[in-house]
Length: 238
Length: 84
Ligand SMILES: Nc1nc2c(ncn2[C@@H]2O[C@H](COP(=O)(O)OP(=O)(O)O)[C@@H](O)[C@H]2O)c(=O)[nH]1
Ligand SMILES: [Mg+2]
Image 1: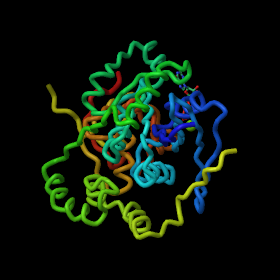
Image 2: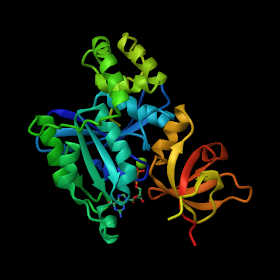
Image 3: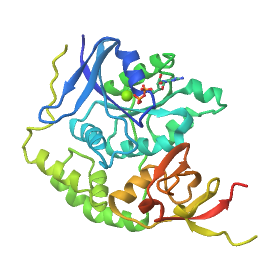
Image 4: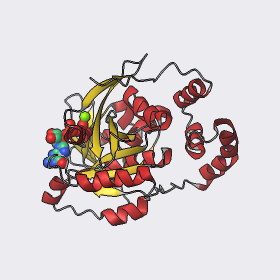
């Protein structure tokens, strides 16, 4: 089996996340329940070289700012459960909309791969996507795939492999905000870092604090004060 | 050229294309609208008004999204095209 790594799939609804998940994992999947929560996430494994990737299909959302239960689940998984890589699946025909979520993920965590799916449909529509340019601008690997036609999978798996072994280092682009906001971040980030240590991105937490995100504050309070009852999800294989 | 006409999304007519200039709301509602693509500078097309005028469907970055009056009355923009 080899070493196991967790890969979380995030993306807007209808970007083909489940299609990709099913195509990669085949029958090697089950549903993991999060104890104490009514949330269940599909999980499945795929072998690549000497490794096992455990894929987790997060709820499809347009955002990760916890406007809804689904957004909260996806966000909490990415920042608190810390998958080895977060794979963001985008719809090639609707990149402007889809990049909103991708940029949010890049602020939250370092190891990110962006899969641009439905590339077959985009090509039919005459949409051309320069994945090299996107990779350079975003600072993380961007790979074109077609989940339905199983296209681009070797490249995708190879990239995941290289990230978990450290052969590729992700360097997510840092979003720069208005001077006013950057000033505030500068003020509170050192304090935030002092409190949360290296467990979460202090810049991201600072931004959420400035945004007045109370659900995140509560979540941090619960998790970092050692009350870890929630969000342990079962890992038995059916 | 004429000065562009400013209007609220709620007052758009079918076919109008409006360029968003401001969102006059806060908190979760503002966040949600931003996430749906109602950002400053975005072009929004009025797709369909329901018989009672609420909700109204808009096309914004390749997706159709229906907004309630309490939302669409708080988004302002400039009329770019009346669709005729
Ligand atoms: N043409 C094409 N269709 C796809 C592709 N990937 C997914 N789909 C279709 O897109 C729709 C949504 O896919 P699904 O996996 O349910 O999306 P999810 O909501 O992100 O899990 C389904 O009808 C899929 O068959 C692809 O690469 N090409
Ligand atoms: Mg799905």
